[in-house]
Image 1 (cartoon, rainbow, N blue to C red):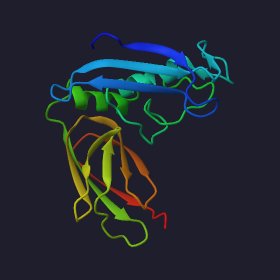
Image 2 (image 1 turned 30 degrees about the horizontal axis):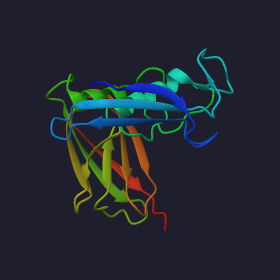
Image 3 (image 1 turned 120 degrees about the horizontal axis):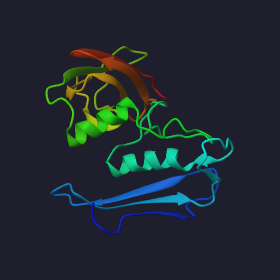
Length: 194
């Protein structure tokens, strides 16, 4: 990483809302990270001892924000470090979950090059029909958009526990956790918000 990276405290939006903000500057050509910052909201109550139940844990939040530095997105699985919500006193996200690790390996390498293929089929829970144009994320990393058959195939998925999240306007976001040990198919049904 380049110079100028920092972690600091400052007022973001007041107590009870956004806890911290990660910002990353990178070269779009080389994808090299040039600078990264994290600002913790000084309006929140913070602790570092892991025992204070009415304060947010600094390390727990810092691990999440560092995931954003690595280009991971928020995910819908509460067991992953990149889960978008945190509770006061929570420390379980101080270390990366298996889905977080798989996301970093996918982006930067270091996992099995071959991996497994997952075919994701997205359906409407009421009509059972295919959902076209839904965004599919594996461990917080966007992998594509469903075709007219409601399908996306994801390649090079490492063995282990993973989370798929599906998002589409007009539907509730859906998340499913599963264990990969071979090529497989996963069907996720979306519930309409209309």
